[in-house]
Image 1 (cartoon, rainbow, N blue to C red):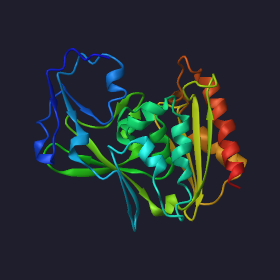
Image 2 (tube, rainbow, N blue to C red):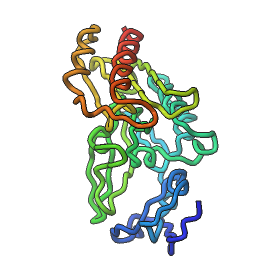
Image 3 (cartoon, one colour):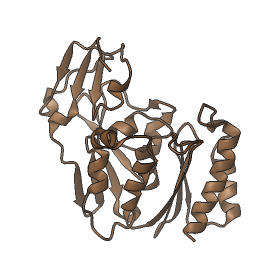
Length: 269
């Protein structure tokens, strides 16, 4: 897609090179969505790849993923054997409606920043207790849980000029067992329901995405029974969080969320 309103493309090499905040500036991770449709509200683009962030760093605390890390880089990373949840990266990538060419350039941070309900990197990070490091334009930064960054369909909590610097996944979540279920109306369709479960030393965690406008993370100190999961879905997710579009009705999504959540719970029993 030709972006005919763009007058400038900036490639910063350091944080000091980032421009002052403006509603007309767009930040590029991989650009796979940005270039897929017109962006008449933008007059300048900032290519974050120029900052040269290390894509993936293993630490004593877990994993640090740069916002500019591509989905392909994440899936192919050589990680410690203790990270039992690592296969979830590829599982979530497979849930995206995207070609291999898109996965080669699309970034983890970009997929999260789009705040789409079916954003599979949002699903992955929510299931693994992911936290975001956000750069403010004044030079400071702050951290926020992934579930608090995506606040509605296509709406994130980032202010003007704020960018995602990286995603942190803690070691306790990466060492856990995981299970995933996806449902779409067609074989290659966009996810209508995407559920990930995690069972580890901190109990059982269930991440609900795609069927709801924003991610919901349900936590249990012990492995739940079917009634526990059903009650949590009913009481912790508002009825109006499920939505209707061409990929499914709200009532169907709600019912399928309950069905797939039980399948995930049973697999991790």
